[in-house]
Image 1 (spheres, rainbow, N blue to C red):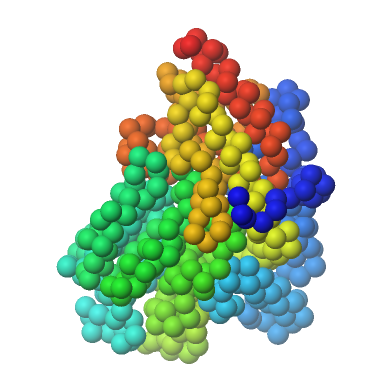
Image 2 (cartoon, rainbow, N blue to C red):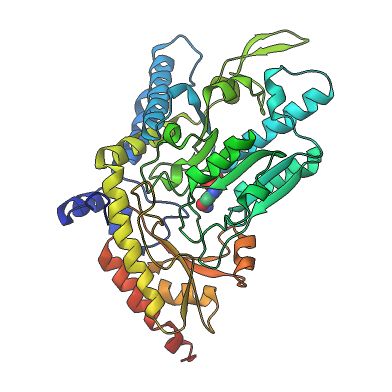
Length: 439
Ligand code: PMP
């Protein structure tokens, strides 16, 4: 591969030493092999310390209060926003804190619904007209989406009379772009897609999809949940309109995530949630709203979590996302060797290549089925060996239906995962069919 050098053995050992949870044992003293990082990642000590430090030293509500603690809390909160913005190639004012990626997508879809209702009632700004949807308009997603990036668009279509359409997935688990110009057409108002599939690990051709949307003036929404923790991501360079990601998948805390929106779009967008902290002047009749990002941050914010997410972004940034991507590409290649085990079928791309941007064209999240053994039983046998994988539909039922399976098992890595752990996983998986006597 032409991508950057992976982590050295010394660097990887130092990385692992930063994650206290990785040292624990499970199931009667077995070393933990945590291969469920796509569901949620483990956290380095600096993130845990940052949350504790915040509560021990700085805890206060932000953007209100004249006292020193409120000032320090606000500074920590805004520094974290700057750290996250810098990490994903955004301006600080383009990052809105949310409780996670799901909430961020719902924020955008709810703002579009709000704009549509406003327009019907003759209210709302001229600028917000670009978010109005109605019969004849189309929203495009893909068959590979996590339910978080499908259901909100289904609901928005149903409530506005717009039509939901989707790009299909090919047998190799990549997006089928053969009908791209037909599916993304002058009726398309929104194109929402995952940067990286949480099931197949495939990286989407962002440049091609963004170009298709731009040609017809559609807004792009990038679900970057599974890319931001594993690949260098520069949202300005990707030229998307909106993007979402979660703290807990990128070594940060749960309960926090981010919505990225191009500045002029956030400025044009009405709030989806209203209340305290997002207002300028409030009378009994009406209210004027703060500029973004505060306009979208109603209520008391998740400050300690945001601070933790900022530290996670800094930690990853210091390690270097090129090195992280290269390390995880090696892990993906090791994982994909499970296809050589009799009875094992990988759902998704079977090799790791280099994409047009010089980055890996898939990440180390590999879903698979074992002939004759239910995914839950596969998960149980692996768990007995101390190996934690995810089983089920991974919140992507349509994609599973596309491949004719109800459930898969998924092994997924993060920066702290080692080749030795993948070898242990392969060895345990080799014994699964014999265990259930289906050889
Ligand atoms: N999109 C993708 C691709 C995901 O993997 C996930 C989490 N599994 C989500 C969206 C939703 O993220 P969250 O649950 O953190 O809101």
